[in-house]
Length: 375
Image 1 (cartoon, one colour):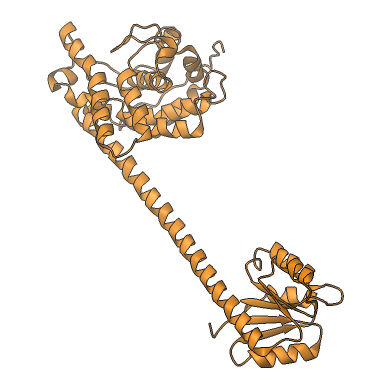
Image 2 (tube, helix red, strand yellow):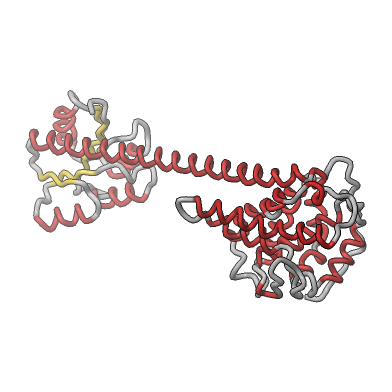
């Protein structure tokens, strides 16, 4: 470590001269004759790699200088070696307890000083190497986690598009419903019924899972999925199977994973139960009320809202005022009443999401006179 810089701090000129003469052939040497000048030198460039610090100095002793060095983020990692005539065991113990790396008694022996300095510089170099390695590893882990996260999001979107390709008129339905469920989660996060469940982490998982809600439609024949007219009872029975098909497909993917994938649990809930209704009249399992998972209840409202404001092969887009009337009518029947209230009382937020991800040629939503529902 031939380019190492050593700061010598001593109020005695003779000591500075002697130590400088000893160290200068090997290291870069800087000198300070007081505690205050030592602190200025330690924070200026070139910053020292090691400080040889006298304890007994007027105005500011070595112990105080050490405390200031350790309190400053720019100097706290610089190792300090006390050089002092205070050579009792208690003096040495005090210096080490305050954070000094070593303790050299005066009068100094040149060979001892050189050996202790070399040891401390090698130790610092090792610590710096490990710190740099840890910083690199932390950055690499963060980069790989971000890359994995992006890959996961793209994979989810690709799987969701499999269902969307089969039903091309849904357009940006995936993006809109993803935005709706996130907004609903944020609106309900402080509600007494949902505060425990709707943490930031849960809302993130919910948003991530939402695009897979209709993945089961890949198993529905085109003659049913794209039929422009009303489905027959038999056809409707087949259509309803997409909820279970989606659940089963995600569960198989979950079983293939080496370890649990947290968002897939919510994806399964959403895929299977987002067509359940609050009053128990939905499908496929006729769940009712709080037996329907929170994620599925939120998805149900988001899905219906978007379906009503959007054109389909079997219907035209409805005016927003009519959509809100249908949702108000479904409060406590189709939808969790508190979730319906959240949408009805903050409809402008959902309309904004719809506008940001609108399909080409879609008419803008006209927000009616603000309505207030029961809490």
